[in-house]
Image (cartoon, rainbow, N blue to C red; front, side, top):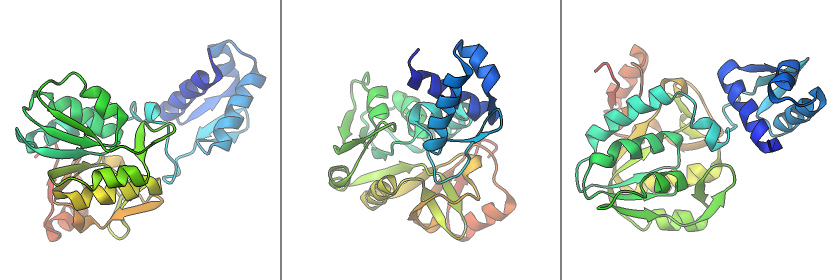
Length: 255
C-alpha cells in the first residue's frame, strides 16, 4: 500500500471516530509505529489532524478542507436526501450550474432521469458522473485543476462560468452564518461561486445541517443572495424565521 493511500484511510477513520491511536493503526496496516507517526506528522503538517499523545485527533477547523475523496464519504445519507429534494426543483430542458462540491455529485446522480438538461460545471467528478447521459449538454468551465479537489479554478474557470446565462445554480458551502453569510474554505472556490451566482436567475443552496452556524475562511455572499435553501434536517426556529424574513424558501425532508 502506498503511503498516500494509507494516509487517506487514516483520514477516513478520523472522520468517523474523530481520533486514532498509533498502536491500533500499526496493527491494522501491518506497519511499524514509526511509519504511522510519520503519517500523522504529514497529516498534522497539512492541517488535517492534530497530533496528540499516542495518536491524533481530527482538525475540525472550518477553514480547512479534507481531500475530495474523504469529503465524499461524509454524511452520504444527508446528501442523498438533499439531492432528492433538489431533483424536484429542476425541470426538463433547464440550464443549470453545479459547483464542485461532493453534494453536487449526489445531485448530478439524482438528476439523471431528467431530459435535455444543460449542465455547466467546474467539477471533474460531476463531469465523470454524467458521462453516460446521452441527451444532455455537459459543459466544462475550463481552468486549472486544484490538487486534491477534482475542481477547476482560476481565471479561466471564472471566464468560462461567466460566459453563460442559466435558470438555476446549485451551490454548497462550508459555513452558513446569519451575520457572516455563506462561506467556503478556499478563496478560489468562493470566487468561482460568486461568478456562478451572477450567471443564474435562481440560486439553490444545498447545505447539510452541520454547516449551519459555522463560518469558514472566505465569504461567497450574504444569505439574501439565495432564493432556496435545501438541507437534510429541519433547521431551528431561529433559522426558519431568518429565511422567512429574507424571502428564502427552506426545504427539508419533513416538509
